[in-house]
Image 1 (cartoon, rainbow, N blue to C red):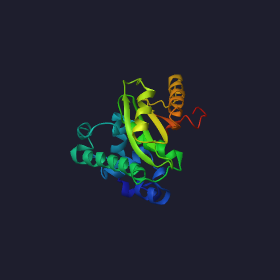
Image 2 (tube, rainbow, N blue to C red):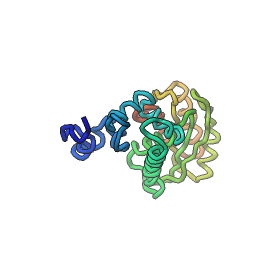
Image 3 (cartoon, rainbow, N blue to C red):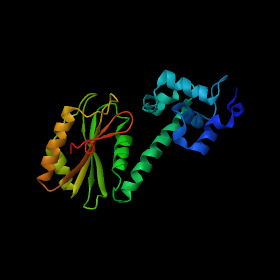
Image 4 (cartoon, rainbow, N blue to C red):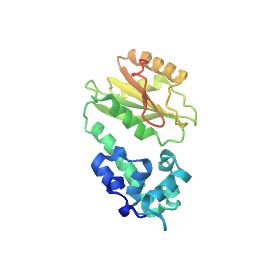
Length: 224
């Protein structure tokens, strides 16, 4: 049965318009992007097949454009469009920071770190430097490690904070395993960073750990 023959409340586009994008499954969202499926399949069937064979969604979207282009149901044109859509999302998340708006919602910083770090295949530690009004000054990837760790040097974080004349810092790193639960080492590094930054009168506001799902805030856990 073609999607146009489905009940209207079950069709992905109609469901999105009526209930919002959050009501759709990963396969339904991907199907809207695909528009049509492989021969003998509707778009939702093709999307489900892509996710079954090359997913979950995070793993599929972590492929580079060349890798996406090789997958049945995507091809070069759709792979380029999907990669461009991901980059548009990156730039949309960065837009508010680049306009110099104050960070009043702690979750917005977490989403920004997630978008910047989630697709990394190795562990990357980054910092967002803020002024006295908590407006973004700069975002930097400071340390790159392996699939299960990155060595963090508090002195370098302090040096970069002073270089940007920052009054506050938010840091974050990814867990390539997908598990966002902070480790004992993450908590220890957070304590060291807070102490080191305080020596130069810079506040550590939060430390986000990025994995699958929502990033975990150490500040929300009471660990900053």
